[in-house]
Amino acid sequence: TVAFARLGCDEAKVVSVDIKPKKLDMLQKNARVYGIPSNKIITLTSNFPNVLRTNAFEADVVFISPPWGGPGYQRGIFDMYEAIPGLDVSMKELLSLAKSCLRPQKTGKNG
Image (cartoon, rainbow, N blue to C red; front, side, top):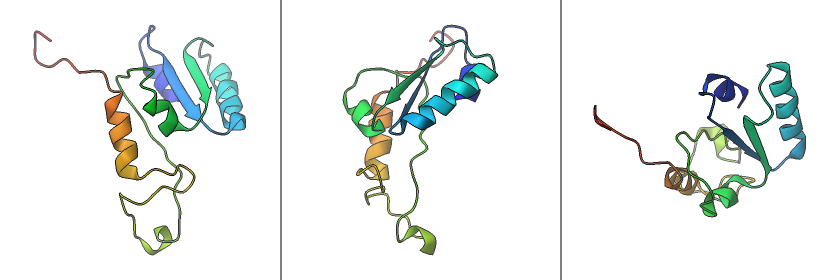
């Protein structure tokens, strides 16, 4: 999140969602260490799929770092349709939700 905030233009905002408030507190501390203005990063204590389902915002970029694990993961098995432990959605649904909040991109020279 800090890296995205540092790379974005002045008007860009970075939204970080986590179900663990302590992780968001650590993020805010790291942002201060790197001199990121407090209004640059918006933190939401929530379940990321629930936030995406609200259609509350549009984004130019979505970065997802879901929790990994589960019994099959250590055996090298990953099922796109199996619920991700801790999120109760499949990777396929998570990617679809993330894509649904992407702002339409301009293409070509004339946008």
